[in-house]
Length: 151
Image (tube, rainbow, N blue to C red; front, side, top):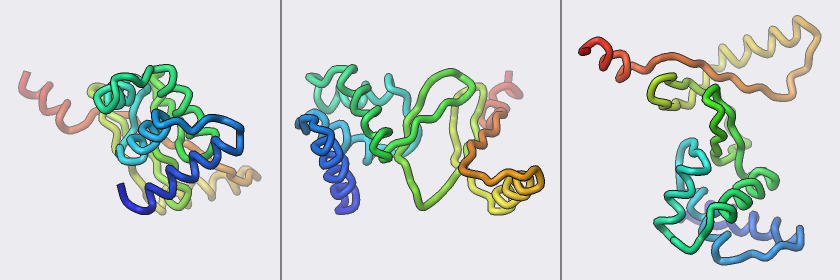
């Protein structure tokens, strides 16, 4: 874990202390694992990873810690069309959208300044000031298309 990730874990634990909550070793393990894990993970996927690191950590503790990470602004909860809540590390310095395969569930983070400007222009045209947005594009990835072509 690098110095920046250590500082983020420490900031999260300080957030918990300010809320009057215990900063247990289990919560530290969950936070450290979360910040070291790239991508978008469901509670179940993340719990499987945590249980390999420490089988004594229960799913409820993992869930509550993920919710606290979101409340503290260190994690983002994402809802795609499959009704499975996923979590990713919140990055306030870079915005991105998602390209999602409807067959295998692969998720690619995308950013295009032209699309971002276009969204702002549309909002301006309609008299809106954007405070945020979620842009998810759904389709079939090349691997899944190739599987169908071979069948």
